[in-house]
Image (cartoon, rainbow, N blue to C red; front, top):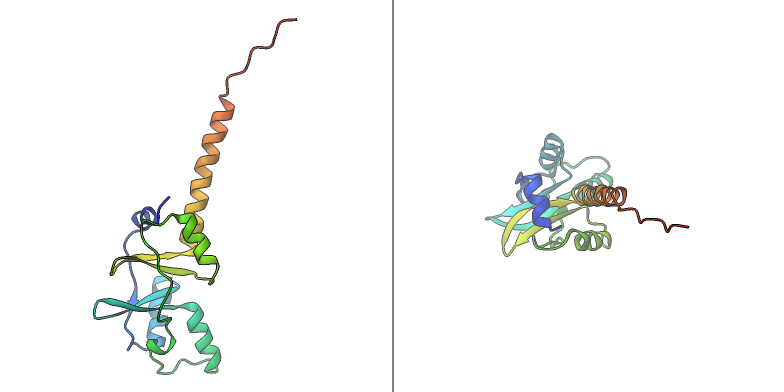
Amino acid sequence: MLISEILRVKGNALFTATPESRARDAVKVMAQHDVGSLVVMHNGHMTGMLTFREILAAIDQRNGSLGEVPVSDLMVKDPLTADPHMAVMELRRVMLQPHACYVPVMEGNTLMGVISLHDVAKAVYEEQSFENRMLKGYIKNWPEEESPMP
């Protein structure tokens, strides 16, 4: 299964912020849309990624308040990205090393969407469930060999 297949099923909803946006406004967008990340865009180009991980670290460092801190102070400036033609199993392996929960999918300079660890887990689960059903059906319908006559 390819990443592009997950994006096709998932849809093209994409939530963004600008580097100048206040982090607390970004949190409101994330909470409103029940997403764990925002792609940070400037002049039509991705400049970073903001996830719940950076938000929580900033809240901890600032004694529970984000104040007026801009997204640019918190965002990951060079996030891990994936190509839509990458296999999901390869993306799963790549995401595990840096503990990346959200990965922007880029085709050249074009942002195609964001894949979450949840999206990957769901795709792998569905693929394995399908294979399981197929194997069980195959085994159930396996032709029995005739037993030799005594």
